[in-house]
Image (cartoon, rainbow, N blue to C red; front, side, top):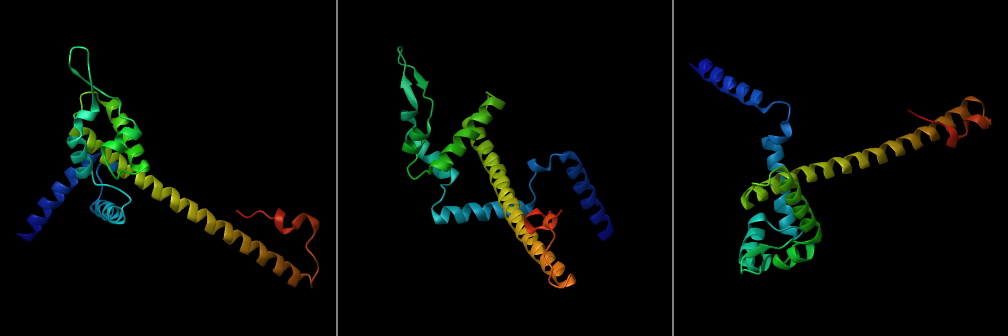
Length: 183
């Protein structure tokens, strides 16, 4: 009986995994979602970001500032700039305002029929992707620093080994430490 239950679970898992296709970025894992929730909570706690519900509430409270009165009295949507966005949402940082506006512009280019809620969900997705890319860039920067330090230590070790093998003789001109290349 237990084997049948496991077979059903694995079958459903396989079909869902197969439906995902090659684009696993659209289907984040439980661990990546947990990390993202924690990171956003920590940034909100430190005052580095505002939550999407708080931004939506501020925009709804100040929605009249988002429109211009037309000649016939109709409401014409304003183009929301960073300064207007930061005025509409008190406490919004420049970085977050730029990121949200940029994500909204990308979302509006993809589909002009998206509603406000759809744009906010797209902004959340794009925010996650930008943060993941930022973490990857930071990791690569750290790895290049470690690699550079490792190479410098290897050059120093090579110089010392050469001096010891040749009984204190200096390195030949072609093998100076600044000309050694390590792969």
